[in-house]
Length: 207
Image (tube, rainbow, N blue to C red):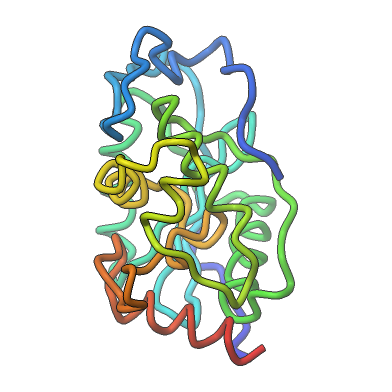
């Protein structure tokens, strides 16, 4: 197993942090779209980027919990993605605790059955929250269809909205949207690339 080397710096969130307009409560749509969210300036997010078995891994956390896990081939692009997600927040790197946290997440990528019980700070619509909660109930080594997830969240006709919620998932691996496949078992789109989705499922099936 490749050890994760820092390069720099469970449960879904319940009541929103008062420092954030985390979830627009007026938005009760089930179409999977993200509501307008404007974080209150002054809050800090710490992040670290490590090398994992599937490329670079960025892990970010607020005072409340892990708020982003992103995968990619370029540290600079990952950091840019994070800044776009939190444009009014001060981002802080090079922190030992965050580097240790990122290394833990990287180990779970390489050995999915290790698992992590971390506080999560997840921001999204009410529908997205329901989908993400359902995704966390899918066991390691198992897959379900988008239609099945739609049934599990009580919206059987909202298959497309479920797919959109998977695409909007900000926490790779910790919210395992890679375990959702087409009705025929074929792999469909994955925010961080189909090859990573295939690799994650292969790692999980081999353990």
